[in-house]
Image (cartoon, rainbow, N blue to C red; front, side, top):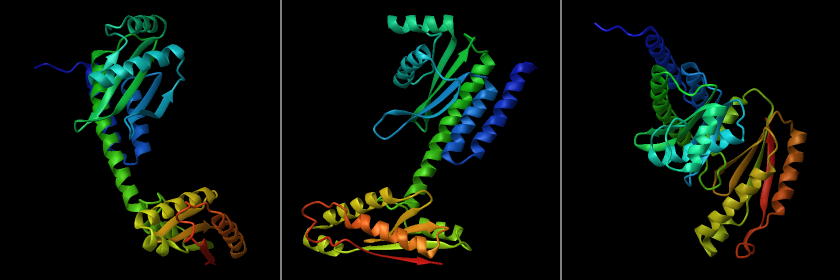
Length: 296
């Protein structure tokens, strides 16, 4: 019977532990940190960057861990990243490249710094992003080390995909789709957290939305509501939360705010809304907002 090499056995044990930690996390940022931690346990890197596809198809850096990258490291990573995305396979500075510029850059990086490795992240047949590693002073990885890192990255892609789906569902449940502001469900949750503290709210009811809907159309009414949401978001201070209750009704939550301060904020917000610039076709029907406040 063949027995496992001691190093391979330790690597397999470490991989199992890191996978358990990875899939025990749920929040997207926590999953990203678990990917960085698990990768460092399986193969000690100098720099790791996770890049994920965002709407529009761009690759956006969502986590960087380790030493900052120099000009040469950034250049080789950029080239390898493109190849990894286009081919769907792991690309490293050990590969042979048809492009002479990339070949020369890879050779220089191997000679002066070490190994750069880029692994594409794919889950359920869909591209999620890439993870980029830099190993200074090393030109290769042990077979067991590379294999465990490959398996971990494949699982990391699934964990990231699932976390992004959960985050998207959370946004759908707690965000008003028209304005992007929190909805009534989120407001209720925040109020529950503040139970027992002095809390104020500013109540806002916009005047003229019905006339806009009836006279123009509901698309123009939606445009007005979206414009209002953008303005309210811009008026918020640290710790405050604006939510849409429905229709033309909005609330701004003021935690730890006594009544006199709430009245002052109500006046400031009312003044800001009175100066709201609306499209010319909506202007004859829009009559500003009725604003009030309450403290409990």
